[in-house]
Length: 213
Image (cartoon, rainbow, N blue to C red):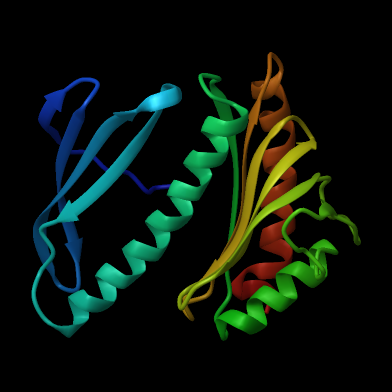
């Protein structure tokens, strides 16, 4: 989730391959609660399964309703990414490329600015997508999912450049956060990430930081 963002917890339930539960202390909205996440896997015919994820332990009040809403949308994006991973890259280890920008402004305005700078204003499901523009690092693939929730706007991509993998472009909330992230696979994935991540961080910092506003 970016520099300085860490989390830890404990295993609260363990019954492989049917159930896994974790618990962690979650600090938000001015109080700390124990947040529990349970994963339940039910086998189906044809070598498939159904996965359910249940989260519980939120605090009371309207402010926590907002927290739940934000986490629901965020986990929706994560589960869509998991589906794409299991479809195209199951069992393969990846290396992350992460770049963040933080510049205040309405979510939709920031999304329009990000896609314009990337040359991806016409991104649509099933369509090819290739970054273009002044100094923008290379990213090329196909649009798998378009995200337009209350708090998030973005796209999930299956990429071939700079290496095979998955990528997402997101802006969230009106707090200013924007991100370009990719998980790349292959024997040279670590080398690709080491080369590409500094370029993406420099590009985001130059265009989507408070200092650049």
